Structure formats: structure tokens, C-alpha cells
Image (cartoon, rainbow, N blue to C red; front, side, top):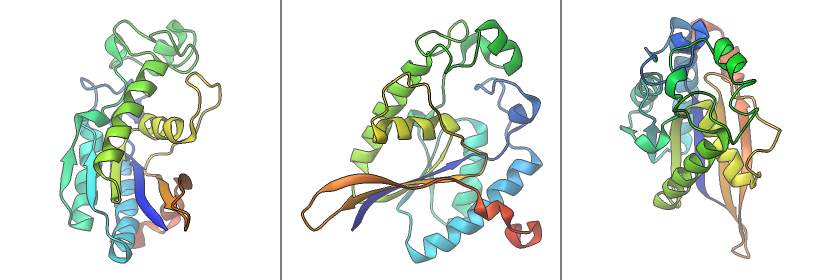
Length: 218
């Protein structure tokens, strides 16, 4: 039996993504036209799922691209959107707004390359972000025991969920691809012996994006 279910939707493509810029709070200006189309496609799919097994709550992080993604899904599913600061992405410090190529060159790699070292002045460390985000996800899981919870999230939040629920050591060299507009789903199962465990049902599912555009966004 499935008890709690966590469904993460990575936001659609944002202008900062298209421009190759570090998209912190100062730089994020929202979704591109392509990003809107991606979210409309995923919203259509989630609306069908919602009819079969309703979501109990919809969360978004505070950055514009997440809130815009959440608003589209909220309208499609006809459920309210809650913005929660606990779903904020990594703190980029002085890197906010700079080209990622420049930031990675200066830091000798991306955030994952040196997980205990900030990638810019005032930024998180990668391990520090994962630890903080994992703590916040644990809080949300406790608050929504038995619920079907939908998140519009950063790719880093999905990675934080995997790190938490798979018990991956901080700083592990492996990672996960998380595509714009993709769906990732964790389910907590309880068997007849009342034994519970988390099962990764879907990761980076973009099958809805294969639909013809006219059909997907009508």
C-alpha cells in the first residue's frame, strides 16, 4: 500500500537557463516561451493523474521560475499553490547573474566538484546545501504524512530528495540528470507486516514532452 507520495516537477526553462547565467534571486526573471510550453505539457499530464488520484497540496519555492511553474499547474489542477521558503535553491552569493562558464572556471568546477568549498564569495557549499535542503524536506514529509504532495522545484531539490531518501553520503561523486519540466516521484510503501520503505517510482520522466505541441497545450 502506498502511504505518502512526493511528486517533484522541475520548473520549465527559464531565461537565466537559456542565457547560461547563474539564476539566483537577483537574476531570475521567469520562464521562456519554451519553458511555458514545457510546463503546460506537464500540467496537462498531472491534471489527468489528479482526477484518478488527487494531490493534497502543491508547493513551490520562492524564485520566479518556480512560482510561475506552480501557478500554471495550480490552474490546471484547481488546487491552491503554497510558496515555501524551505524550497529555496542554493545560495549563489557573488555568482548570482554571472555566466556559469565563468563561475566554474574560477571555482575549478561546478558546485559538485569541491563539495565542501563555496563556489563563489557568499555562496553555499554543495554539501551544505544538500544538508539544509534535506532537513527541510524531512520537515515537509513529517507535516504531510499520508498525503500526496506535489512540488515545483529546482533540479537541486530533486537531488537533495534522492540524497535523503537513498541515504547517499554527502559528497558522493555520482549525480542525477534532472530535465526542465520533468517529473520525479517517490512513494512510501507499507506492506502487510507494517514495514515501510521509500521507493523511487519515476525519475526525470519527460514522456509527456513527446506529445505534439497542439495536443499537449490545448
